[in-house]
Length: 350
Length: 76
Image (tube, rainbow over all chains, first blue to last red):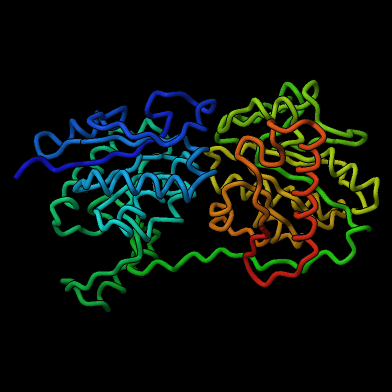
């Protein structure tokens, strides 16, 4: 038997093409090449497998053209007919995670070729695709590449060979909701009592049936009288007064900003910019209304379409920012919005 | 963030480009935007046309806020 054939998907960053300024790089097929993390994977495969092609796509390009890009890449993969398809790993890069999850799931489901990816559990791509395709749990930054490769390579080989895949805790993938019957050595009552004793003693224990986390909020009733409603603008796009006075971090933000826009008719280049490090800032820096539409809101206020634009806007950087942080920020400023008599919110994201 | 604002009792619309992420996050009113680095703009247009485009999106967002929804809804 020859070597197992692998096709690898990565983004423009890991292909050394460029950062955010190259995120609009269209999909590209490089036959016979392995790049960036592909080198580490190829090394980990030893003589057993090799990457026969690398597919590269800019993160913004993929996410702005999901259907066409997916179709194009599927066509390439179909023609290459690998034994296994690997996407990423994407760590905590959101658009990259969505791209990796989309492609790995599509290759598996539409071409019937074994596929896997890897990312941090808070990556939005994780919740979207972890039940569709094997997804190795990684750290939240590329510093976790070695660890990730150590888990991705063996799982890829197993999948390619059609070997039995162990439980998520054994193989290192994110739990995907699949349950497998097996015989436990101890019976249920005994295990339950053991767990209870550990719990009472304040010791760590592992539940056998984690409760599903359905954190959904019901929609609030619609705004009845827009012409008398105070509307607030909020963004995760990192729009801040020029100079970023509160030093909101370009990624993994630790706080949010509250800024007064009384009398501000539009956000111009001289006074506003973005602190966000996860997208090309050129367009937002030139005209921040492209992210936080103050100019249009002022017009609508003047025309009486809305009651008024709230005097403050709230902002943070949604780039690798922990879900727990974002939740805490919003829980806090939402109370301020309510106290200030705001009746509706427009939240913009990049 | 969108969920916490909703939880506080405020109707909220999420204007974003990658709507599948918004669905996963749990936004109830979603308006698809133009592009990741300029969700409410298009630098290829001249200033007046770009503002018109932005106004269209904001009007769509306001329409979403004044529309009753029973679950997650994308306002195309």
